[in-house]
Image 1 (cartoon, helix red, strand yellow):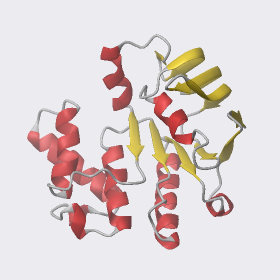
Image 2 (cartoon, helix red, strand yellow):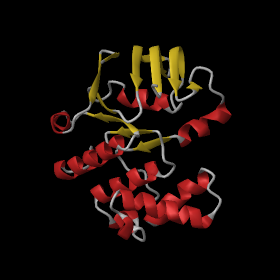
Image 3 (spheres, helix red, strand yellow):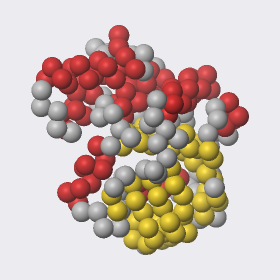
Image 4 (cartoon, one colour):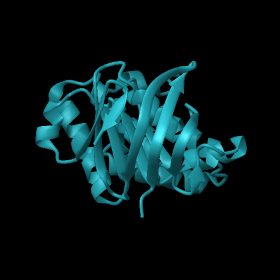
Length: 219
């Protein structure tokens, strides 16, 4: 059963149509590339999936949520099931790697300190960063920071990860390692949608390709 189903969706930003007639489905464990020129609407589409950009036309479902009628109080529950990986990391610079991740758990309702500690350690272990939990973000390389961001996205064991140009600020070799990591996550059952303009990645790592061109999604 698909975890995302869009049918004839229109996406607007500030009353301007960014995308129209968008129809696609994503199943559990799928790895999907979202490609298109800079400014084509890739980020807007991703943001619509976690109700950052509203959907007002068409049919749009993510998990059991109808995005056209979702209530404000339901949005945090939707977002808890989605991990987000940003190009520019968005780590809190005034606290350690551990504190960055614990902050997310506290904000999403983990009340027990021991359970938080165990989950942070588990997520960092998953991305090979368990020995860097005491470091501050500025003490890490770009690739290490992106691994921490992936660990942060995994904290609540999401069913879907959205990665918006996750290799954009990384050198090619490090970028390859990050995409390999996302592929492993998909192979373990979490769907991954990765927006990228690095078409070389498509030759190295298999995945379904969706392309945005002239305000339309081509699948």
